[in-house]
Image (cartoon, rainbow, N blue to C red; front, side):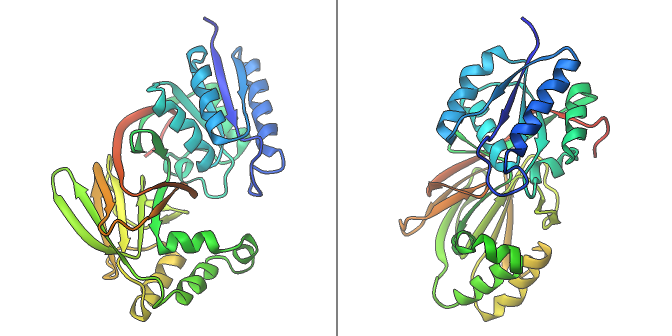
Length: 303
């Protein structure tokens, strides 16, 4: 069978770096570069997440590798397809998002042409882990729930462009005394069950988000950070977190690490999660960190 790479991209990307046809342009440039190296390729794109997942799963048997052009949201779609298909295939990433937490974690080039060159030459590969929700949905960068997750959805794009991170702080202060913490039950395989007041929960696959290192390293585990409440006493710690991402040593924050967890609403109240920025499933959820799940094309030397 001829060597064929799939190139998956979001042809309807939003207003970020990958918008206005840039992802499509880079995808076609990637196809041409692969052809120059004697590698056939197949462009994969279709409107809507369910259809995109189905397209990738349908095409996988024909592929030697899957190249993903886009940010963490596009990565989420592709890796969800691989998880559902139980596929083990080499992947390459051409970052085109705003933050690119996954690419930053593995020191992938953020310049598209440099990323294309890396994929064509393939100096090295590394086995990388992935967090999975309910055995079917990848969590590439983060899973969140609680009031702050709802607030972030309220912040308009114009506010973010004008005020940056201060727009989130302003919204949070407006919610002080109104949106109460919820009792959430966290069940861990070897540590039992804990019911903790949760105003906001951030679960990540790495120790950094948005370029900020906020936690100690815990290879092979998910990072769970809980903002227990938001009142006037917590404004300064929250402000510090919003500006620096630094959660360490904060009394307002509870930090945990785990390889697996079941998370439920202790009161049965509906709680919706967000995965890699998009609205996702409601609690209860099952989370499992799969070690060495994917074979990623990386630079020759990474830490």
